[in-house]
Length: 255
Ligand code: BTN
Image (cartoon, rainbow, N blue to C red):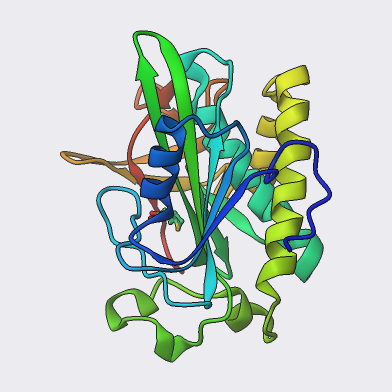
């Protein structure tokens, strides 16, 4: 049905017409012993989750709402690398399939023409220092039109259709993403993070520019140097030294 020509990803696919959140289904599947590479796809989510407890609008058949269950054997501290890997997979797929120039806004928002078209939510279960499993949730706005977005997000959000002018086949896009994900993941496991970092930086939004990093209780203006080996945001501090940041939202100066 899904026409996947892959080695391990999506060998088991759980499809729901409607569910609360594919993240929840994935966590339950993980607890029930579902294998590495299990993919959960929903046509519609009634309580789609975004980062920072935000809501993710997931209207029926308008976009891709899916979660990938991974059981990676990597040290706990390197798990942010998986999120960056996933962002790179999405950006590379959009670039290749749609002939657009996507950017990744750290850590993992995919922007086209400075509007967000996709987001990633990584959730992890760890015990002591070991990763039990990781759920990578991918939300892609595909065929929405402006009127489909609630007013409060229409300013910042967009869809692939709005940015390319054409409706897209959700199945085909899912296939392309999963194929690329598998390839990049296998390469990452063999060769390490360096090539992912290089690809990510190629898509990095505002790299080399001044940005604003906003956290819960502060806000600072700083130069965005790139990403660190462990996936952290690399900025220049007031003393002119490199500093790593692990949390926060990037904002930028509009012309
Ligand atoms: C973000 O940018 O804040 C992350 C959005 C992640 C949305 C996806 S849709 C599939 C999966 N299920 C969810 O409830 N959330 C993720």
